[in-house]
Amino acid sequence: MMRSLLLKRLFDMAASGIGLLLLAPLLLVLAAWIKCDSAGPVFFLQERVGLCGKLFRIIKFRSMRQHHAGPQITVGEDARITRSGRFIRAYKLDELPQLINVLLGDMSLVGPRPEVPRYVALYPADVREEVLSVRPGMTDLASVQYRSESDLLAASSDPELTYTTVILPAKLALYQQYVRQRSLWLDVRIIGMTLGILFKP
Image 1 (spheres, rainbow, N blue to C red):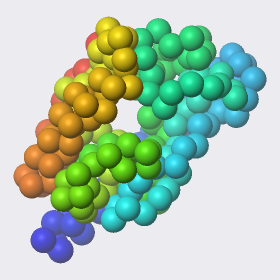
Image 2 (image 1 turned 45 degrees about the horizontal axis):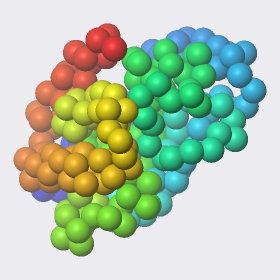
Image 3 (image 1 turned 180 degrees about the vertical axis):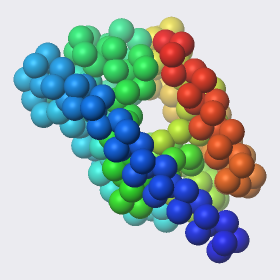
Image 4 (image 1 turned 90 degrees about the vertical axis):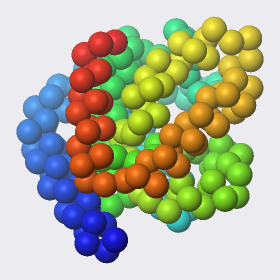
């Protein structure tokens, strides 16, 4: 187990480091576009729950207007989303700065997606312990299956209720499946699946 954990961490560090170097020109272009498109910082920082319940700040490109108010879930054509934000969210480019989180050790390339504390508080105790026993990831099986989550929520008369009673439990089941079956080969497969859907907004 220790050997597999070490290999996974080495893989994460190498891949995130190389990724940041190769993607640096794209990241700079996106940062400039976001800055010119609307007032506010380039990055959006939000407190999430990580390994063993430790809190950390996730880094994303800002895709919404500064000082926006509203729910912590995004529903359909959310009016808070900027023009640049709509594009980067469609291709998941807003997630790229999380490579920094991976390099720092807050996250892994693959693992259960980190949630905000208010939703983690809804996890059943045994599920919470299992899901938080690994580093959260940039992508996972749930990210692939629920890529159009905001569209599903837009079709609901009560998006918050639909998320907490339908989508979140389904995601937790996939998180548990990953934790129980995790391996470097599974990580590579999930990364491949994720890359395969990136250009299908």
